[in-house]
Length: 368
Image (cartoon, rainbow, N blue to C red; front, side, top):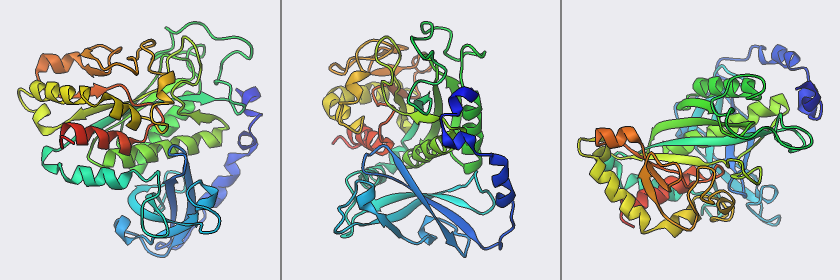
């Protein structure tokens, strides 16, 4: 891997030197807060740091901050101030101690949300159906790339062997950069992100981790911050993370962010009927959901949802028990138990979890 990493300036830095400064003592009431937000692409993240002289008990204690929105695709240069509203706090696994990571909403100068702030309307929808106790889990797939954009570990000329031995694989010829996966897993646990597990995926250099179950709006907060941690950790290794839904054209699996959905009634005895009712509602809104399931309103996902490589067709709605080529999958165990959850396999790996969960809630819970 040293040959690959030499292409990244980050990989050439001696990380042990940094630790001398990380270990320097500071006053107990001093907190380094890293504000994190979604930029104008709707899929990339930005961050910047500030010093606090108190330990916050929650996001409402934190000051609203601003940034140059003209440099992030969220404002023009003649009126560039864009505002960060803290919404969730996580422990910082990089500098530790009392230091924190802060998930933020973005707002324009006039108080209206930016175009990529989908959390505001998602929260409004979630607040209308708290009695139904919606739970979500997201299976986040991603691919690791060399610094030059080539899939990590792939031959410089040609392709690796066909898919088959890589899924949940073990061995140097089957999986690449497990170090990043383990580091990310531990960092999420330390931060307080509800990460549930991880595994190697079907395409070499492709991985997955799962977040959830999370209640309501927290699924978006936890997933976005988990993505930030993955980018940030990979940065240190000199490796690039891509959430592109089809990073390699051809007969290779794409990457999704399958979402598992459950309400209180679905989890109760006889809940399979509620699941079937929800699927019927989703079948009537297929096009609207496809537009909500990737940042380019279906244009990214159409490269992935071809009906091949464990996907459904983007043009058709389908469902089935244990069927990974359907839009909606009912797990075999759920069918056997007669209650539980369903999996919507349509969201792309670069989807906004706020948009995805909002669309689902408005359809199955609010009948909108």
